[in-house]
Length: 487
Image (cartoon, rainbow, N blue to C red; front, side, top):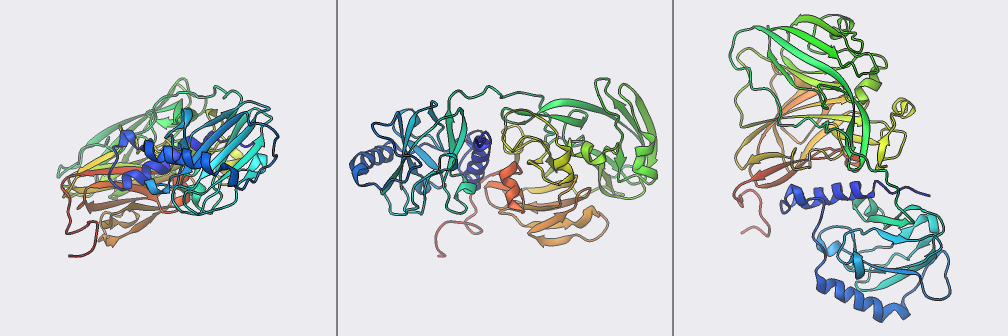
């Protein structure tokens, strides 16, 4: 049996990214594309009735007599996405609908080609698949029998179509009630300190608390996170070169692990880790002077260090140069990380950390700010207006994967490579590389309204939760971007 509990998450992320790239769908509706118009569904249903006798059938097991359950799906490419759309009955108009059956049922699925693109429908566990066909309004059927309870994936096997969103669930028997809810651990990209400005060096106190908690990784899915102050990433710290920083680290008395902190902005053994080995219920304090400006990663450095980082214990500390950073309209705080679980991507319930997957460098999830698709939700979508300037403080907690940070539809006007704030920035950059434990600062002006998608351009990672949105409001700018030919 093959689990498909990740289908809804994956499909919603892909459809949201596709729809919002066009700037046509609010974030609150991004995971639910519009249903097929009733006329199209009616035509598909009529085609299904009229053409059934002439339709070729490929089936794992052709049963005598009437099927117990029948479904019709139409391919939906003409609606702007590679999707299946339900036709008739309770699934009418639903995108990638969940089909249901009971053990022992004979199931019939009719596939109507609604877009003239090459498609099929496949269910591996039942050796059931149509032929691949591209004639618009043509149809094919599969008939097979289901025996065991479980969730099974139906999908289009044409290369790239499943990855683009053509997949759904066949639920046989009762769906297990595994969905769980946990604490919100996502650190808002808008939650960062005010600029330091041109002030003189001073004494700055920073308080952090190591908190272990069950947090929300995805809809219906939780994970046991390790955090600084209850979020991933931890709070962004902001000081200036020459400041003296007194850092207090408390380890919550509910913790089961010792925790510490290594700040890459610190000059001294362990970056502070050797002075902050903090047992549950205890507090440690150390003091350091910021000798170098830059944007630096901090993280827990308690063995296994990679385990503590992977579970969420990382963040950024910005050490502004003398005089501060130039003013800008919007600043955002984004970090990339990996989640290593025993269960496969999309499994609902409380997931278990996998040390073996960590050592194999085989994460199930890639995340911005701690959770799958977190920066696509209403609370955490970044906002700007046409003509605004934008600055993103971007870091990689990791612990293992380098990011190819990219904003689809934008070009970075300035990239402060390796987060060096005193070297001249790179200009006119499409994608910038950020290593684990590294950071960058990028700046750009938004000239056209719409939704811009933050990705790691190792784009397979989008399908494991790594995506964010920047929504830009304002008037169209046809001199820069418009539909149609040149005038």
